[in-house]
Length: 447
Length: 88
View 1: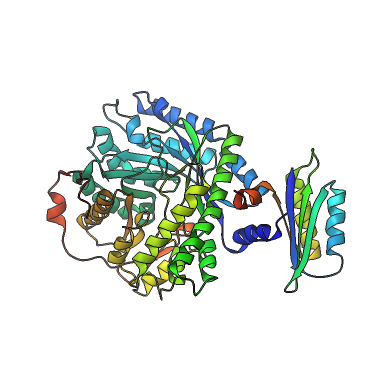
View 2: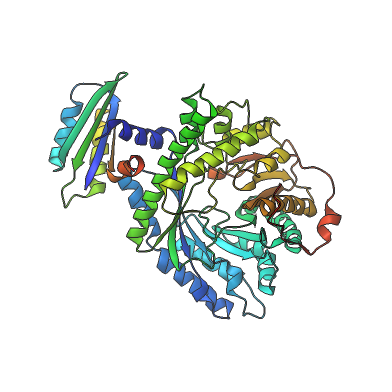
């Protein structure tokens, strides 16, 4: 019995907020397609409930027996735009309701997959789904939506970029809090267990378990214990810590999959913050020696953190997937909120940071009068970073009607609160309204 | 099922006696014990084996109640989680 190791594990969980952020069951809905939306919706409900009915009891039992909190139990499904291609007039609201009802029946926190992948072009069903996202999010409680508008091998679908800027505005006009349930991606991954961007890609199997770990507090404490260390030591420390954290994800995922009788798919090696004290990614960067997140040096600190987490985590897990990197949502990270309130961090610096980590401009509140074309411009900029750098990027911005810079919005719980951040007041409308497609980039001559 | 029981709190008379008596009453076999006082805090770790028909949830609840009575924090978790984190 190694007392020190036992003590270390218990301390990580009890004092440093180590937890399994999510156990997400991916469920394929391709066998639910009927050609008639009402029947398809019924089949969607039946399949989700049949496959996921034991997910929450199993996760709760594992949490109790092994003493590790499992914060969220979630479901990701096939992008539902693919389920209604045979309908003359696809109506996705019954499917959104079926997803929501099924999520409530099996008591999962969220269900992702009210999604479309349109990086090359939009089918009539894709367009119908995008048009119905605001209504679907308003009519449901647990459904999350995502749209992939670009990819390194496809380029950027700028018609979809324009539509998504308008879509975000339409959602915020109903209720800005609904906008946090929509993510616009470039290079979306098919096995992401994190919300709001989770969906279960068509290349995945019928049903499988994915886990996402979280432990910013554990990494921060480990670095804080070495105030005079050089970067080699810092990187080694992060790698070792990430290894231990990721082993939890691997272990819990494997046990959950065995008990549920389904394959275990991937561990997502992400550092996901919460607004709780001591659970902040920004604090890790500050502990490395930055007075506040956003200071020159922040991008370098984030780059080394992100890379060291992957290096440590890859060996800890059998299969790694998802987004795998440090998340930098503004509203979900106590020190990020502080930096934004004090004006230490700007949208432009956040954009630079997204070039070296996962995922993108995340949980950022902007003034309510930000034009749709400006939001489309932000989506296009983030997507361009992802497209050129062969990485996933995303935009989850929240225009808050009636609010301006200096105000704040409260999301509640894990989603935190966000100060309204300043957006460049220039005009992108001519650029966005051109329409068409930005071709895929050249994959050689990298500079 | 092998478990690790940890007991942490302010040192006082009879913590070990009360915890081990409770474990014996629950038919839990102690395989290894480590106990120390760290900066005034009583810290004990036990490796133990639950009976074949043992109800983990009930034993956990009993131990937590006992911890509340004595004024110490008692945690119980299956041993595999510690191996998973620390062993290659």
